[in-house]
Amino acid sequence: MSQRPNRLPPDAPPLSVDAAILGGGPAGCSAASWLAQLGLSVALIERGPRLCGSLQSLTYAQDWLLGAPGESLAALGDRYAAQVSGQAGVQVLTGQTVHHLDWSATPGWQLSLDPLADAPDGPDAPDTAPSRQPLHARTLLLATGLTPRHPAPLYPASDRHGRILDALELTARRESLPVGRVLLLGGGDNAVENALFLQARGHEVTLWSRSDWRAQTHLVQQLDDRPGLRRRQAQTLPTAVVATPEGVTVSSKAYGDEHFDHVAVLLGYEPEPSAWLQVADALQRAGVTAPSHPFRDEPRFGVLGLFVAGDASGRQHPCVQTALGDGVVAAKQIEAFLRPLRESQPPPALRRNNRQVIHIAGLRFGANLGVLDFEREGPQPIQVDAEVNLGAQTIVSRDADIGHVLDYRRVRLIIIDECTAEHTDLLEALLGKLCTRLMKLPGVVGVRIKVTKLEIFPDCQVAISAECGQW
Image (cartoon, rainbow, N blue to C red; front, side, top):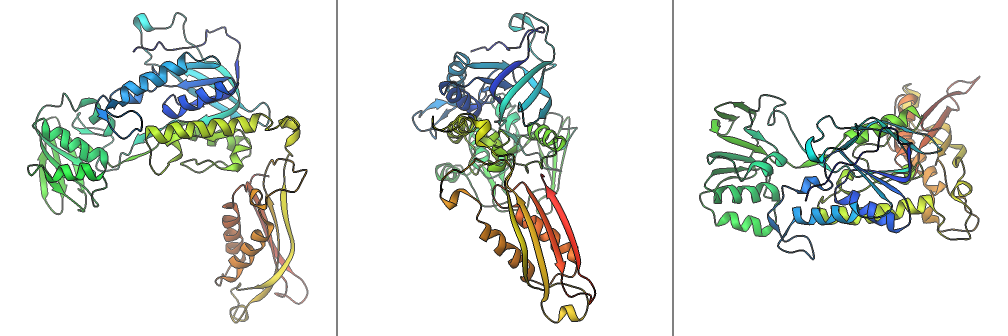
């Protein structure tokens, strides 16, 4: 099923939507479908020429997706794409990439979209010449999926000569790969399934894993039925992989130099970083501490209208089924951010304060701190003053479950624990420890700390303060 790239005409006014979704895979499509059914407007942005394009090469039958045994992921991707493409309220923009991204408290996210330089020509090409287009979105959802890991020196940055492949490249070429000697590096489902497939097609296969087999039991059991398939389990991986037009030389301490026709590096996936880097840059320019990578769902970024779904969050088990569920959860989070949950609530703009801060003032206790001899003999009296910024918060007009807020007793105990757990020579180092630990608390976007040494001098007190995060 071919999908024509969708682009806005050059003279179109800026598109304004409730939610912009970066990534048109299963998670993005699932979220877009749910958001549209919830009555919200969506721009679904996919850099490839079609939605769910990453599934198109997965044409073999699968049994791990509940409700679709024996069906290929390619066929399922076609169905996901067809449903979303025909759904009212969803603007599908394929063949597009984000050139620039900005965030502000109002109106939210501003995106500048570019058509990809290698967008298809011919009968499926757009009627109008593409140009950079602005897009305004009240919320942004990252659903950009995964990319194969390319660890050096196993996967050279250049001079691979088409003989060193990653997971996506092997999937695309394995049916037409010339029969020969193939080395697969990895021990998960992907590596074992490919080893079984290639050996069945006449290849001389070596499967090399740095740990015990991590594949599903039924796949590992099939390995036992293939005595001709060479297995190297729980062994140190090669130290060098060098490709030439004639083949690949693999060097290791255990086996010396070996020669293969093709090598596939199947050592897992990692969240695709490009969209996250743009988001982090936009938030830094706005004075907001950017999320770590991989970006996981955190309340402190939800108040900025920033959400994540599917494999982009670095979840424990990335697959189509978990991505579909993540899309639903993200859609509900976006709805909760944009709309009142009950008619009795005021509009979102009135439900949120600009900032909520926990203050701990005048906390005094003995700390294991200092470089002087007498300071090493026992705890020294200090005073800690702390401010913990929770960012924009929902106004609470009645008692609520304490589990929904950050308990200030927890903040107090963390400060005392960090200052008394071990001896710290420098006051500056203690400030760093306090800031780091408090910033890890859920919902915290900024920390200010002041530590005063009460008895270091007879005629004065000495204090140092630090500030980190968003203020």
